[in-house]
Structures are given as C-alpha cells and as structure tokens.
Length: 184
Image (spheres, rainbow, N blue to C red):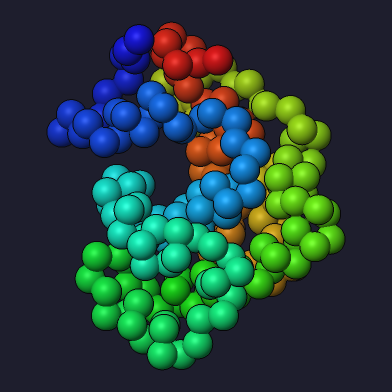
C-alpha cells in the first residue's frame, strides 16, 4: 500500500513514519509519553529533525522511561546538554524531567495516562476531512483544553499547537488526506 502524500527530498524515514505510525490510535502509556515529549522537542524545529534523532532521544532518555527520567539530577542534565545527537535545548531537557513527574502523577490519579489523555476526545478518534494542507488546523478547542490542563498539572512545552500535533501523531485525530491510502 502506498500514499500519494509527498515529503520534501523524498525522505524515506518520514514516509515510513507516516505509513506505519502517524495517525494510528496509540494507547500505550510509554509510547504516548514519548510522542508528547518528542512533540515538545520539535517546537520551533521541523518534525523531520526530531524524527531523524528519535533513536538518539530514546537512548539519551532511557527509552523515555518516566520512572528513570524523574530521577535525573543536574549532572545528568549537563551530560544531556553535551550530547550532540539530540536537540540540546536546556529548557526542553529540564522540562522533560518535570514532565516525567507530571506524567507519573497523572498515571497515579487516572490509572493510566491513556485514560487521562483520551478523555479529551471522549475516547473517540476525531475524523477530519483533509483535501490539502490548508485544511489542517494548527490547534483546536480540544487541543486548547488539553494544553491548559497539562500546564495546570505541571507540564511544559505543551502549548495548544504541540498538543494538536500530539493528537495527530497519537491517532486521536485523523488528519490523513482524504485520498491517502493510510486513512483508516
């Protein structure tokens, strides 16, 4: 199966990501945490940059294990700041540690992060009709509410635009083009 979507420079990794992951409903807490953190690291950059560094992020951040990340001390943060294989933004690295704490708090309150995050769409996939890039919003009322709630719980780098991109990546919203063969 192939898609008529195109990527600048015929980027194979972007195509594989689109065809196998992007927009597929995700309910695994660890994967949801990874997606949320990576979307935060993407802020101000392109997704292509982050996607090409994803394996490095996984290595650097203990495979996005929140129980390990929450224990990071200043020495570990400084080591990460020296790791040229990831995005070395001090605010984003520090936010990752704080976000791990907030993530674990949500798990303790709701049982799973999945139960918490999918409540914003009432457990349903939002199906959008997308004919062109101009049909894609950068944020919605739902991503605004998600952002506000995440921020109130101590998360950082979770603005509405980041939340909407997270919703797309995790399959909470289906923004595949209408003629895309990967539209479920």
